[in-house]
Each structure stands twice: as C-alpha cells, then as structure tokens.
Image (cartoon, rainbow, N blue to C red):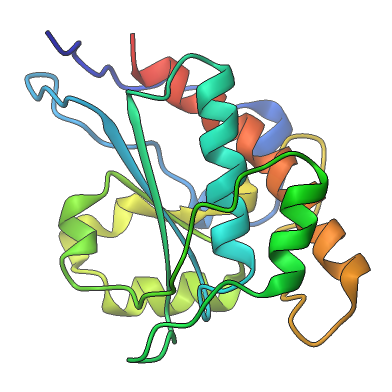
Length: 195
C-alpha cells in the first residue's frame, strides 16, 4: 500500500532561504492531505535536453537508489527548446557521468509537453531562462510545481546550472558538481514527503 504524502515543514531550510530569489520562485510541493500517490514524479528541464537535464536525471536517480527511494521516485528530463527530432545525449555529458560512476540512462531528448504539468509533482528548471519559459507555458493553477533546481542546493549562492554546450570538458564537470549538490537537497525534500 502506498503511503500518504505529507506536506514538508513550513519553515524553509535556512541554507536555501538565504538566496535573494528564494521567496519568489520557491514553494513546497502542494499535495492535498487526502491524496495518495504510488510514487513522486520529478521532471528536470533545461533547453535542449542533451546536456544538463539528463545529467541531473542520472545523478538524481543514483541518489534515489542510494537513499532507498528507487521505487518511490520517477525521474525524467525534457527541454524547453528540444527539436521535433530527438537527439542523443552529448558525448561529453556521457563521459562526465561515466567517469563518476553514473549510468547515462537518457537515450533521446524530448520537448516539454503540456501534459507534463499534470503528470509531474515537481518540475525543476536548470536555469532562470528555463524557469521563465516553464512559468510562461504552465497553467496558472499548477505553477507551484515549477521551481529552480538550484533552490535545493545547500551552501551555495549559485542560482542556476550554466549551459556547458559551447565549452570544454571542464564545463561538464562543473555541471556535474552542481547537479550533485542540488540532488542531495532534492532527495532530502523527497524523504520529508515520502514516509
């Protein structure tokens, strides 16, 4: 039997709340007390869905497995500007993931769909541009689901994950560092909802 999801504590994490952008983009996942879900569904979004968001997806899935939440979390990724023809993940992203022991599970890119706003309980944007794009197309009654991925990263003033596409391999390593920092916070938040 699935367990009821409870709202997180009303007091925000002080390590997150110190960000100047926190109050304008962050709100807890809103789930009615009587609503039961078999799992928590998370969508991670960047621009093209070939670098940042599939990297974050791979990290979050590994952290979920390590935390014993593998069967309670469904994680996918998409792009706000992904093309109609799916593309493979950038080879540099795959190499960075592989070097740290992550499985690059995302095979093909996809564009954010209108149905995603109903399907997923939490939709995390990799940068402020992605966040603005999502908020623009998201139905008004579901905007609480759209948040910044980096809002969950503790002890950092960085508010977005930079696009490494036009850079070198070091840029992908930096993206992976930020994904790991934020994924820890996301998993901790999920643990407060799934009991």
